[in-house]
Length: 127
Image 1 (tube, rainbow, N blue to C red):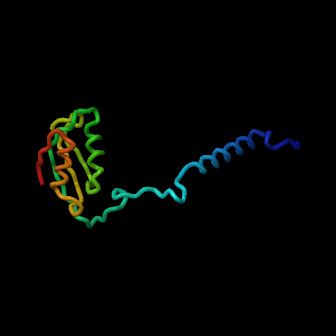
Image 2: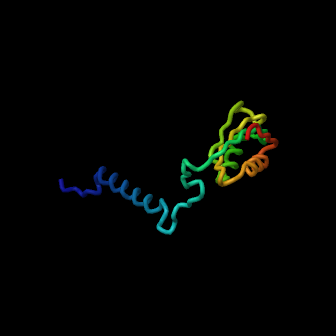
Image 3: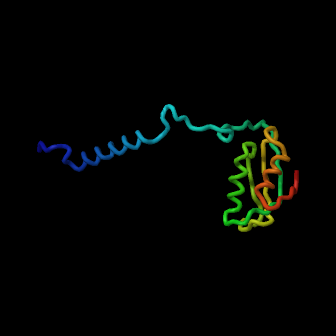
């Protein structure tokens, strides 16, 4: 009747959950001196900022994840807003890609130059 509370199953489970929660919350998340990094991709772009689109036919470097590798490399450019693909998703050859970019932050020539660095071949289809 007047048993010791820490011997009850419910008490031990509650105490263990509280201990685990305290340990996890103490070790997770940034401290006051560790603010999250903010770069150009983390800042919203106003809808009024001019954008331009460019369509190209590209031959990507042959890999099983060629499209993803290209996307990740091109998205490192802060002015690139959207990359969209059409055509055969299983191939790395003769792929058509449309790139939307912030035209006040970069030029068409710089985007084309970067795409040519990332591909075996790139031909502009439309400006």
